[in-house]
Structures are given as C-alpha cells and as structure tokens.
Image 1 (tube, rainbow, N blue to C red):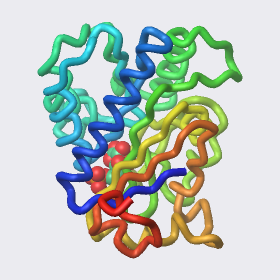
Image 2: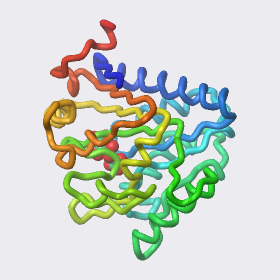
Image 3: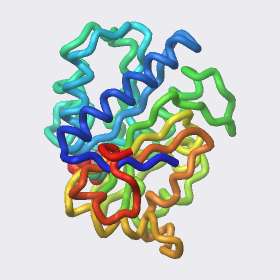
Image 4: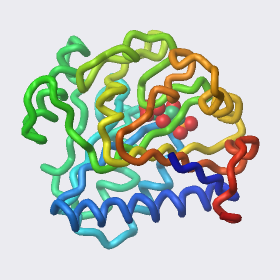
Length: 243
Ligand SMILES: O=C(O)[C@H](O)[C@@H](O)[C@H](O)[C@H](O)COP(=O)(O)O
C-alpha cells in the first residue's frame, strides 16, 4: 500500500492525473487496452476534466463505473452524467467503450445482474470468476464508505461481481468488495477535512471493518491512497512533497 499526502486539492488532482495516465499507458502497452472503473461524487470531477485534456489513445480505453445512484442517466445525481460532462463528452472515446451501469430496470437487482453479465461477457469470464480491472478509482465518504458499500449494509458481504447497495433508502448499484480487490490497481482519491476522522479509523489497527468499509479494500494488486493535507495531515505518513 502506498499513501501520499499532497499539499492541497489541486496538487492531489495533479498527482492523481499523473498516476492514472501512467497506469493507463502501461496497461495499453502491456495488453493493448485499459479498463478503468470510475468513482462518483464530487472529488473526482476535476480529475476527469484533467484527463479529458490529455492526448490518449481513447479507442483503447474502456470506461466502467464502480457504482451508480439508481437514477436516470440524465439525473443530476448520476455518476454517469458527471463523468460524461467532465470527460467522456470532451474526447473521441467511442460510445461502445463506455459501459454505464443500467438504472432503468424496475428492480435494481435485475440491473445489478445485467451489469454483472455485461462484465462477464466483456472480460470473457465464467460465473464465479473475477475480472482484473487495470484501474479502479475510489472515493471515500466521511463515514468510511467507498463505492456504494455503506457501513453495516448487506452489500459488504456480497460475493459476486455487482450488487445492490443502499445509502439509507437511496438505492445504488455497486462493485462488490471481492471485485474491487481483484483489480491490478486501486486508487483512492480523498480530499477535505471532513474525511479526517474516518481516515483515522480506516488506518487504525483495531477498528471495525463493517463500520468503516474502506478497510475491506485490500487488493491483490496495487493500493494507492492519495490524500490532500486537509484529509491526511494527521496520518503518520511522509507527505509526497517531502518524499
Ligand atoms: O457514488 C458516489 O457518491 C461515490 O462513488 C462515493 O463512494 C463517493 O466516492 C464518496 O461518497 C465520496 O464522495 P465525495 O467525493 O463527493 O466526497
């Protein structure tokens, strides 16, 4: 695990951009394609805007979402809408390379199953197997949740690829813990003093995993925590500026 504390939000976004582009380029060089799953919320929007300004082989990049609010794709709360406006609508990334989570099924469980089947088809895997995303971007809420894996919810124990999550009564579709943990590279991008106390619990030796679900993210591949100083100043790590 690598933890970096950047001096402020813009330094955090700059570092996140550099790492993301490096991982994309490496994946394409090694396997001819990059598969990346996006996080939602507000933190990553400037990162997506910065990625859109890069010169990349867009036709070799496939974009998925690690979670989605169960709303139409034109809803202001849609993670898909945010990423399209900040990034995907600004570059020549083929529509067939964009893999949004369906949110138009009457039953969210049907939507979760459909996305799971879509991943199995895309990655050419059988039931019970897990794909290895090149990059999974994650944020963290002030309660220690990540993706739509909220404290003390059933989603935390799901063992397939995709499950239904819930933030109180707000329904979500989310990657599961085991799917995230099969990634080649998981990258948390976290900013703001409001995340400080949850981060202390996530990195504590004896906190409860189901109370702070980000603790469950222990990938076989690389795990990066990129923090701004407001979020990470009390963690006992060297700051990126000093390292
Ligand atoms: O759908 C979502 O909201 C995200 O996937 C969620 O996990 C987000 O990353 C955190 O809640 C942090 O959100 P902020 O970046 O807005 O603080």
